[in-house]
Length: 57
Image (cartoon, rainbow, N blue to C red; front, side, top):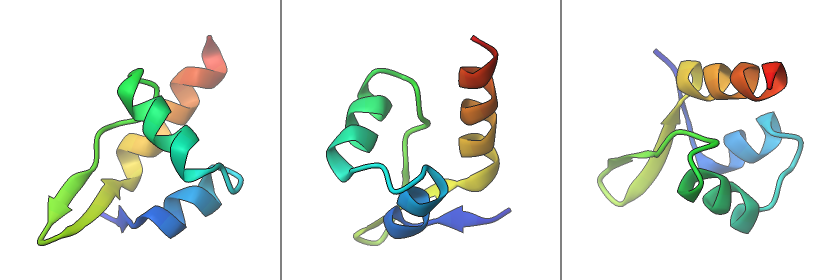
């Protein structure tokens, strides 16, 4: 299982802005992050699944 930090997530999403990413999380278009210590990470497989679901809509 690979985890993405915010910088890696932004790159994967085509350099989408931080505010837009958090808006997408709030609206359920992206998975919620997991907190390790004081840092946030996203499970790459969950992000991939959300991206493919958005493409099929």
